[in-house]
Length: 302
Image 1 (cartoon, rainbow, N blue to C red):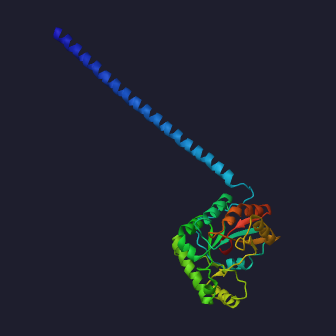
Image 2: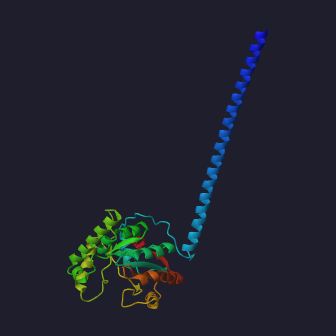
Image 3: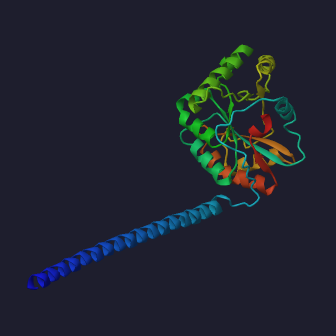
């Protein structure tokens, strides 16, 4: 009997020890589950805070870069757009200065540049405006990253020839076409899209002028035969003439815009045009105050 009770006592002791181990094990599991729940909840809270902070930051930025509620925003703009010349586009270009509504096309010649183009892009981005850049091929080769930034920002990259050296450009109508082609190749290389073709050329110095009139007229037809349109301007700031001042830029803008419904505004973004970048917000605000909305030549050609 004594041995029996000793055996029973040992058995109970073993059972108690086993039960303690089970309870301890369960306790460990429960604590582990609670810890995982706490970590999960903490992570969710952190993510929600990040989203909330991002939304607050976006709202602040949007408030800062959209000072005018009337600024139109075209959500159809996307990066990597390939211009497609259509008959509608040809008709639109032929009637570019005819409009029932007030439209402003901001255009910048002779760029890109390392110092001015980024400032202009920053201002355009703040106002959510898409512009048209008539780039020089020689500058595209120097600053391909600026052209890529313009293109990725949804701006229209048009062609202003390669050299801007009149005697060379206007030596013949074929020379004009070759300037276009050479610049087109430089643009394609800069943006990394070999199919890109703007179908749009701006003659260096414009289509006017007596000295090269014959060559320019021949070039117009040659460009048209190759599905290339051309465009001048009907408003400007005269930022490339003489020694412009802030007052002269605004005076020239106001006088050349006048009462026109559709205005193609000529400005420049080459390295010497700091005043253009500085005055661009005032130029934009004036046009906004006059009731203009803003478009690029994506809206015309396509």
